[in-house]
Amino acid sequence: MRTKTLKKNKINVVTLGCSKNVYDSEVLMGQLKANGKEVAHEEEGNIVVINTCGFINNAKEESVNTILEYVQQKEAGVVDKVFVTGCLSERYKPDLQKEIPDVDAYFGTTELPGLLKALGADYKHELIGERLTTTPKNYAYLKIAEGCDRPCSFCAIPLMRGKHRSTPIEDLVKEAENLAAKGVKELILIAQDLTYYGLDLYKKRNLAELLEALVKVDGIEWIRLHYAFPTGFPMDVLDVMKTESKICNYIDIPLQHISDHILKSMRRGTTKEKTTKLLQTFRNKVPEMAIRTTLIVGYPGETEEDFEELKQWVQDMRFERLGCFTYSHEENTHAFNLEDDVPDDVKIDRANQIMEIQSQISWELNQTKIGEIYRIVIDRKEGNYFVGRTEFDSPDVDNEVLIDASSTYLKTGEYATVKIIEAEDFDLYGEVIN
Image (tube, rainbow, N blue to C red):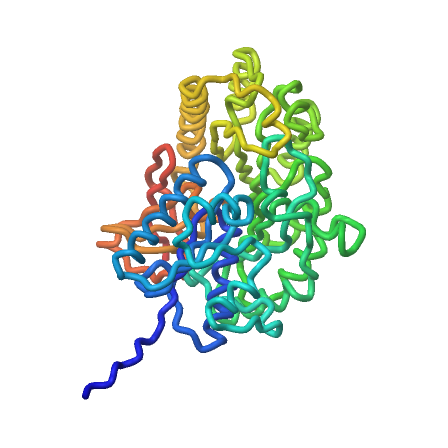
């Protein structure tokens, strides 16, 4: 009589949404590995954990479709168990349990110990800062705070992530040291709001002090700032950026709009005049800085005049990097009480118009780089090119530098000195200078 062999479980973690979710998945995977579990990221596995996004309609649809896809695989016997965590699960758990009951269990954004228990693992407190990174080996995200205290009318993040909670500087330095020991050279600092960092722990905005501590970590060569809020921006950060070569001359500062009446309705706590003055200060203090922003078009009550003002402002400001989203009407947000009165086709047309303007600006700015020499990091090889970035570019969202792989050999994760020989809207072509 043949005995049944015990199949070893393999846990497949699937990540949807933003870099904060990537970070959370990495923490989960680190805990699972420390518990002796076999774990993979977006590969095959008989147990699936889906880390969902619930930010805007498109992201919610993708999350729901992914859940349904794995539930079908479970019904077909391809996978044994499906667990769901993350923002969608935090926000809509009762609805999801009712509509998709075949999921084994749903967990919110703060229920990591419960999720681990369901996966047959224990939460190990001593592993704070330990994670299995899923990004290329040369860069990693460093989440310096969780949650958000801002009252923005359109945003559901506080519903899903809770109040702002800063991570102590010493914990972040230890985490950075662990990452550096594994070969990470670039830290991308993320939070819902970097600007607010430290107010809860240290009773003051403490981002500059955190940066001064992180630049001392051996092996880290670039530190990049993502998601700063314009209101209350701590100006001492600019001084650190100017004096510390490890801090990239780069900032991601989502501004959302510029019409005063839209900013007021959005509850952004700023005005066109204040925002423009802030950006002028950035450029005066750190002239080399690349500024990335994101905008929302089609917000309730956005008139043609508001949109024309936004368009003109984008042309005047000449942002180095810019993304544009169409407004998503999110229940339980303050803006949900307003009429979603801009038709979808108008929203899409407005977003396309903004991106056309930005494409031209990006092309013009890139032309000025021809003949210039930059230090770049190589992220990957793709087709006949090695693909890298300057300090002015973040992974996945910004410009890339392409180097002909037939004439040069470069290593992923290494830095190279490159002369720009050609430029398009969003790509630069370079040759290595020895």
